[in-house]
Image (cartoon, rainbow, N blue to C red; front, side, top):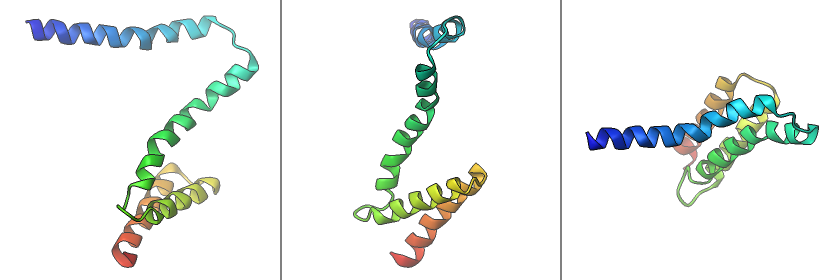
Length: 101
């Protein structure tokens, strides 16, 4: 029973800071510069999550991950669907690991 209450308490404590902004943001009018800055946050977070993986694809050889990342950037600039960007970069890394390393 103690474990259940502990998990329930942690759930409530984690939910409060996630749910409160949903109700507050609708009521507050932000300046234009804040709104444009907030639109960039998901891209920055995604980049921060992906970039370390690019550098650690192949131990001791970061060129494999960098080339895979460059392919992903090029495919996304061409405005391909996200699945083609993902499979293109994975395929590039796979081919490089199989045939060139």
